Image 1 (cartoon, rainbow, N blue to C red):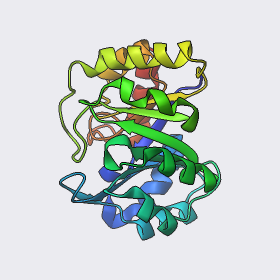
Image 2 (cartoon, helix red, strand yellow):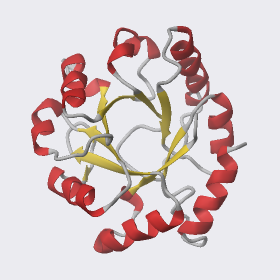
Image 3 (spheres, one colour):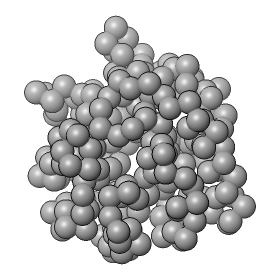
Image 4 (cartoon, rainbow, N blue to C red):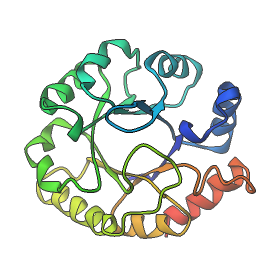
Length: 222
């Protein structure tokens, strides 16, 4: 499975988002990661739906949207995404996660499920047929620049093994949080294939996006 860089727009220049999108396309990012935060599910605010829709109109790259909001079902009608965009629901954000994933698939988007560091993998067991993208949070969601939760690396390996054993080897396994040049080889070795890249790698200020992406690709290959 091709390894993917999902560039976190949370770490981009928000005063020149169009310029940042062009620069990320030029640097070779595979997807653009959009964190939608409501200040309730996580203690931060970021990318409201109209801004995500504007990004979708602006770029040729697939969007990788993560809804970190309470009651995501209520927000879905406000998102105007394209077929093939990835739309991830945090399992902990709704009592009706199966219904939310079905609604995402009904939008012709790729349904994704995210698990917080403290959420055990068994919570996703009944949902394997309902998502095509599993995202493991390596930090507690809400803020960039956090340290890796140490036990999350073992969780990657267990998730990949479970997906393969249950017949879902084609399900992508993404990681989000502290995807640094040092951590990414460990994450890739454990079975991750998609890396949400932010301030610890792609957006390292002294490198520039092209060099950050080049080094990240090298780290992804181990």
